[in-house]
Image (cartoon, rainbow, N blue to C red; front, side, top):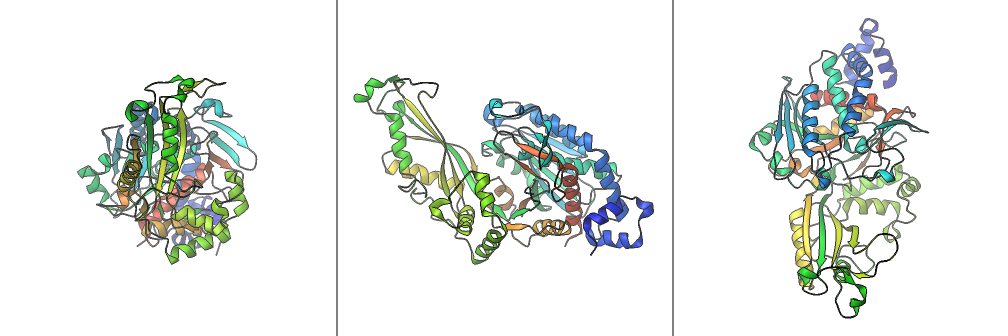
Length: 510
């Protein structure tokens, strides 16, 4: 069969040069949903609007909405709504919650099918001193062997892929074509703090009614690695984010405030009290969860999932994986295949950070009156965030640590999506036509609030899609590829085209 890139090149020659052969090929490639000249005109529109699309992304990154800092939340919500209006959404509503607002929108193109979309408009915190380029400059930089990249907070998580999806909508409309599916859209501004109020958006009656009409929900992503491979997952782990707080005031022992460290001879230490409590949450080597009844409902991986993981282990490069993590050994010195099994199936108890007393230059001889552990607990099917938090509190109380505050800041249940769902099959189809055989895993070890779609009452398939590449989520020097040095990896324009292909594929598939 003719290489797909050759077809795209010939299609770009214009409608006048398209032959019957090319038209037939276009129909086979895009599921009889679009003609070759229509596809070529959309591709041309993406190219023509490159600067416009890039400027939209840069302007978005320059306005950071950081929920943890209550920074620009209303402004970020308004910008999200403005961009939706420009992209053609007809109904757009700001959705107040007990926290930061969300957005609900619809785009009715009169199509037989409706597709759900999930966006986030917030980003993680950042320290400009840690970045090689200011995180809000959204600078375009040349990176050897990668290409032209945009560096900035939110570049790949998730503003880059989301702006790329909007670029696809602008191109379809700019080419004078109707969107092949209707869209129902929700966005939140609290994803990076565990989505504590997103359920208040999704569970609004009009939102539920709109999503019940959809065939599934997807979030734009940049799924390609630097070698062009794509990782496909059929679910995600759940998570709860929390703080454990040990204080002399609540404990009734030790100081109520920081005091001179000489008093350790006669006072209890809230910091050591917290350390003792933390030590009970894991096995003596600090690796496996030991919270009573925490993982009682954890579903073991199935034989089919083991086979999927075994295939992924053969296709992935273990040395590259270790290098990207700065690691020399897997947990318990597991094999690579075993490490992937753990990644997909193992609940975790993780300390994100420990804060107590003085942490500045030099020493300061104090006995802290308060100590805090910032933590996250990852969950697998069939665990729930609610039951995990309850198990943690009961575990601490049983061992004499009931005074330690457990402040859950956010969290959500795991998700699972059938391998044979329409949104999963469409992704495979689009990747296949691009010459990519996705590497499959049962679920990602990361988390997103997709359980609101996959769980009751909607029970919809929900996943991620989008070609292109980026890296550095939650870290300094986060980036998104704008123009790729590797022809196997799509830049921003090519990634926008992948969303066009995906939407038409969803429209055509049965």
